[in-house]
Image (cartoon, rainbow, N blue to C red; front, side, top):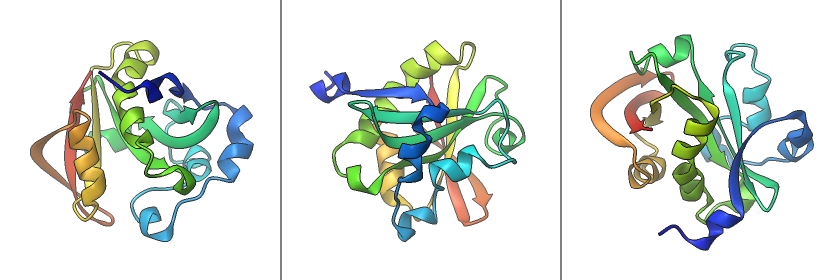
Length: 163
């Protein structure tokens, strides 16, 4: 059974209402090598306009972020036309260590079923040097099928989550 923290944690598609909270989002330098700040990703003109920008909220406050992308970038990781690519997953540094990343990922399948009908898989690339993230993804249902992608910052494990 999922702990009672699920009651106060939810996933929500981003709206401009959260821009102020996102402008105060902080990640340490060692994490920024593997991800990007939410507003940088949301405002990036190279990200498909059909990407879903998803917030992890705890008690209505933004504590985390990720994007579910389609288009060209997805094709580097999957040939499944019904997949989305999870990118830029992070938890604000002031909220790390509380289990929010794990809870957010546990809520992901239900979010996808409700908000992206027809999507049956989430894929992601996690840098081989980012062992804590790799282990977190495996604990929350992602599967390593021994596929790799040579990313701009080194080799990445490609992980799959069936929804």
